[in-house]
Length: 279
Ligand code: PAF
Image (tube, rainbow, N blue to C red; front, side):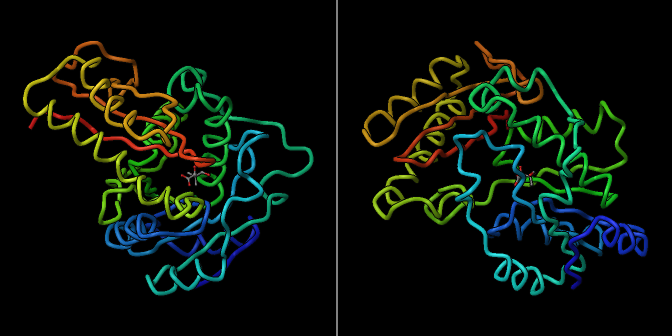
């Protein structure tokens, strides 16, 4: 496995491959990342993983400086998966002092995570576009856990004609249902114990959907009512939106819905979602 820190060295290493699967990450890897790596390995043979805590996708009051980092552990995990290339650049390598071009999807800032975290998706789209240009993967892999991110990346790839095939893989969960996230490491033991209620509330709404309920407000209320029973949760938003456009729905039609939420639990902000689809 090659650990690469410069754009020039990354380009040289990339030139030796034909098919190349990229798994972009911010490090502190968990089983969700590793499931993307395995998928990339199975489909492309050669895999690159980027590890870069991207400063431009954090707001000034967010957790950029305390975001968990452990490069040595990440490298050991990736070596065990047979990853060929790890790209772990410095912030200056990606954003030199005269950096001044951003990829902006204005609609993304109007809803869900974009509305809650202005400019977050400008940072995500910009760094993913740069990673695609630097690494030039044929395929790239993202998790469904960050549902709006997957919509933003698919749109950017379409709009800018980027020659990368995007795969979105299902959310990986702990045995008790909590969606895996590097930020779960912030949870105290008591917060960790109640966090799985988020998935249980989403599942309760999914059960109502499967029983025939199609009114978005009723399904959202099912989730909110369950979470309100636990005073430690502070709901930021709960949404039932068109899975492709992320427009909020009143009635759920054949296109199904993305049921998603953000809650605060102590100082930790957790997001999760389920796709409601007709079976
Ligand atoms: O999902 C993430 O970890 C990040 O948003 C990504 C895609 C690596 C861009 O920094």
